[in-house]
Image 1 (cartoon, one colour):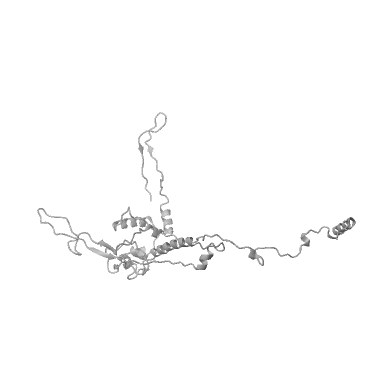
Image 2 (image 1 turned 120 degrees about the vertical axis):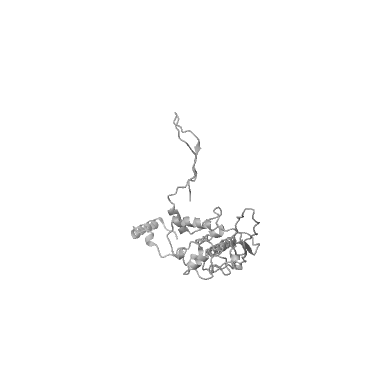
Length: 301
């Protein structure tokens, strides 16, 4: 019911006498605010980014560097000798005496190398429920197109990982590693503690019996580790070219740790990215140089 003016004045006076100096915060009672936790936490849903952040090493450098082409042959043929006078015989010469007879014909030793096919597969499967949920805002993280792209990248990474296996890892149904391709009888014979019988055999070629045409150059040092040096680098360049490598087609593949050591070895070598021509200095009366322009190529690594 309403209050008269006198009663209202008395009410206000009593209020001031009773609660003078007390704020509303001092009078607050226990409450239950709406928060992100229980019991009203269901009103809030944490939403995360739809894309999956990839915090993994998934590079496939070696796989990317190797050539790819359609499989159209069962292998290849190799010429494992220069012209010889007979099968497995000595190398032919071109010396003929004056008015001598026409020399006997010669041929080279050839061989067939079988390179079979291997099947590689990586499968992912998405349930019908997950596919339906992925179309709703409740769970947009299952982006099928993005997942397929990641599967493709991961497939290449797994092949790249196999390419980087040690020579002792026999491939079986997997792809062959570069370390098994680049091996030799010398490595097998001198690294007996690490390389075992048949480890270096590839494409039905036996590297255990003796040195042969299918040996690569391997600077194995009999399995004894060494600190990287310019001498080792120069020796590798020299010996690989001697073994038949073509410098214009050759590339170097190594780990980031070895690359860092190489940079430290050659950090004093200057690289001129944009060389400029300069004139032969012969100042004239106005102080300007004159003469023909000359340039010099600086060695780079």
